[in-house]
Image (cartoon, rainbow, N blue to C red):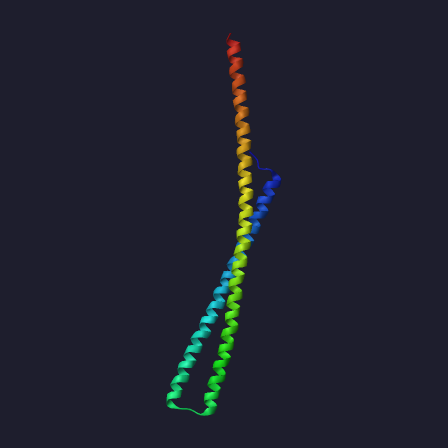
Length: 146
């Protein structure tokens, strides 16, 4: 049994929208992973730099050197805060893209369900017609034999 051409078009469109939404979700996840990786690198670099700072404190250094270390740590903290904001934005984008994908998937599934129902209804209709024809045939056969 053929599916209604309009419904078939809707299913194809919904499938294509779902695929595009899945691709966008994948890109968002990948971008988030990249931003988290950069944040991790910044945090590790800060820890290493601070460890060097502490090690230098024990051996002693000039006030200008101390000031330079502090200024650089402040710049790292600013970069870390900025990267954390980027990570948070990327996570929000994942949530938005996942929501879009789920919405598209629900629409696609509802069209599939509708197509399945239509197919089953057509099947029942065809079975009824077959049964009717078989009944008529049986009636004719019994009338013919009399």
